[in-house]
Image 1 (cartoon, rainbow, N blue to C red):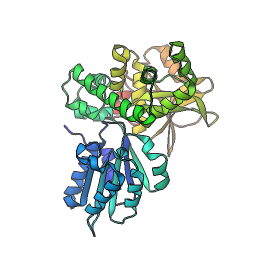
Image 2 (image 1 turned 45 degrees about the horizontal axis):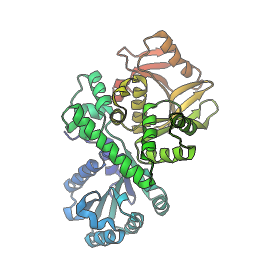
Image 3 (image 1 turned 90 degrees about the vertical axis):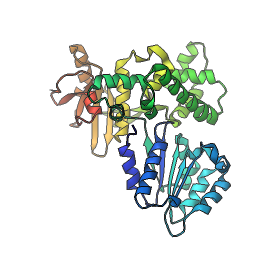
Length: 403
């Protein structure tokens, strides 16, 4: 069952025929190609002829000859339909060396509507950003949200079981088409991990110490939701007998974030209204991928796994997400948006009074009047603690309650 990625799809439709390049990025296998396939069908259903669409996937061997920038430009120029709009879809464009100049040259033509995808954020750095400054919009895709996962697997009647499956098998769309056998899912997730590490990290950074690289990514996966610094990572690796300097750790972190396997949340001083430069937190793009990396111990930390899921959901909904510092305590998420700020604590359960008190304390220290809440997995009626809401996280993920 193909799920329409409605939010991403409607953004593409809204930018149709606009003189701006649509750049769709995100981790491998998150659904970029499927989104473009749906969009291509939409074009064909809305009075666009097939010859007006040039659709090239640069991971398809059929197009190997077009990995040369000059050959690609000549091929496209030959196929442009005069006096009509030509829709140009270039999938995994980062495989073409020098693609930036091709895109820039094509953009100058009046009757071309350009859509490009890539699995690395660095494709938007350097030359492309310089050439196309102010002339592109970025649509950053993630794998399935929990709500999309529930719909794809038709599990609306049992959200608790759906959530357990979501954090075990992961959120990559194709998993919904696999038999629900752990070996199949593990093999698929492992293949995604291997492709990201080999193509998007090792290949680009020319890394020779692959074992060290994998030690760092596993350390990050094992420490989602924990405050980390590059020095702490370096010191931990070194104390485990794998000497690595801070600069190398920084290089690895940059590569992981560029390939969208890891997301970084910086810290924000709520009272001082300033961004802090140390002790960031890191979250995985997919919990299933984390399970494939860490094995049986991966599901032990229920609280941090829920925190990871909520972090990605906030990103999906368009928030800028930070870790909040209030005096000597921490707010899990400061979610900034055009109307202000929302403060969020995440806890697997707050039925224990001491836990509830601990989770309320940071929010109680915030003196402004922006919304505050605690999200938990407790199946209890919503509660209010002097303006601080306690809501069920699954209801929030399913858009059943708003915050």
